[in-house]
Length: 313
Image (tube, rainbow, N blue to C red):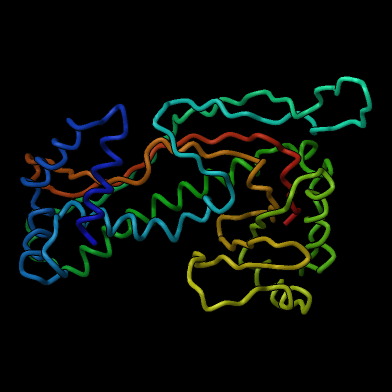
């Protein structure tokens, strides 16, 4: 398993044109002299962390495995992998049409497009550093928890950026041309009004994002409880539920959500993921400090604002 994580980290670094094979070789070299990665390799060789594996892959696994279930923002947006600093994304203008014909030549009334350039100029990073003495003496579970916090921190900031993207849409440009009133506590009619606003614009409500407060209010509504699809199958992230009526969609709960959002994720916005989560050794020899950093790079852009409805709470 950890071997696969090593290969995945290698692929992420090598595929980035600004990094490549040279950067991968440097990362490996730095890991060999880094006291923290030496500690990880020792734990691996002694079988204390599982089967023998590469320290880089193991540390990357700690970070990425913690980031993945917390990247709730990715549930709210179309994620496109790219190796380019800028992606030109097609945006449909108007609706495709057809006409009744007899002996006349059919008019070309299919969809027309303009384009939105998504620039991957956002890089987020965080890390942990320790003195050499701390690395040598600390219990492994303490070091592990601090490394996992890197993945959680990256996921938190990424999600905050995606939510901010939707919150920045002007009220007049939203589905229905205004925010939808959401009472306290939320009523079933409010829930339906949010979905209807997107549907009326000829988009499909696919995801709804709510605050923890609204989430638990919904679970007091019989209509909502009856619409939740309960399954023993795994696959959904924590804080994500499947709703099958009145629309087949997913509902996401996050403390980072400030106002209820209903989104057609296939039309509303794009996340151009230039470089997914990666880790690198870090050290300051003069201070005898060693550590690890985690980072990723992406760009965000709105395509169709009418594919988004926003509640007042």
